[in-house]
Length: 82
Image (tube, rainbow, N blue to C red):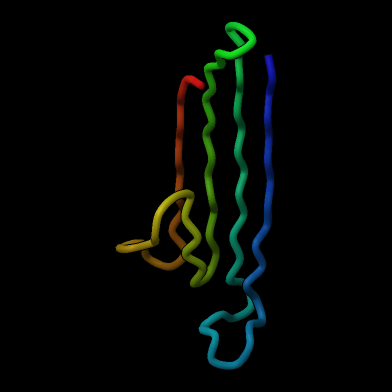
């Protein structure tokens, strides 16, 4: 049994002139995961993650932010067998 956790902060505040970012345009990621080993070579895993955006930040869990408005949140899940 293995538990995994991750937390990250992306501070886009105070970007260079013309960058399109201002103070308060930040993103925060939190992710939690679990891995269970059936045998030496077989694992099942699950992970859930969420990004919270402030201001005009548009960070996403996966892919591109097409159609996503500034300040919206992004959530992602995965399960698998390896």
